[in-house]
Image (tube, rainbow, N blue to C red; front, side):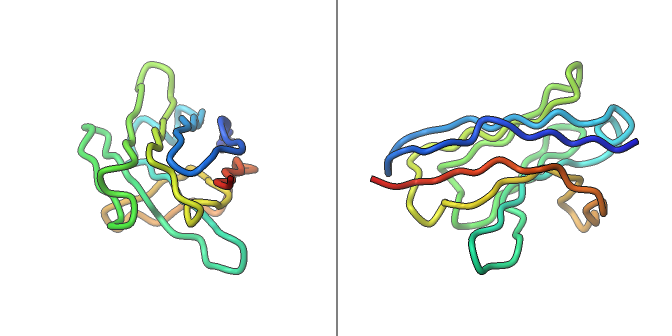
Length: 118
């Protein structure tokens, strides 16, 4: 059974930082690139960062230099460190398989809400 459990969101002021975590089923994690997606109110879900099984990373332009994706293969966990947060980063953040043309799984976790506001 596919399981994706995101955590670490919250309310933060502009310029602040957060670290998100996602625990994934081993069957998903070990052989797939993993991605962090976000969905802002009224917008489509978008892939913002991805990491391959070999730790190669990729980012969408709007988060380059501010967000860092990483993975711990021993813990089946992927992280997203977010620095210099902006109000436009406000969204529900999800993890799933993704990056390099890999299609996300149909099953999604509950996501974790990040709100950037003063």
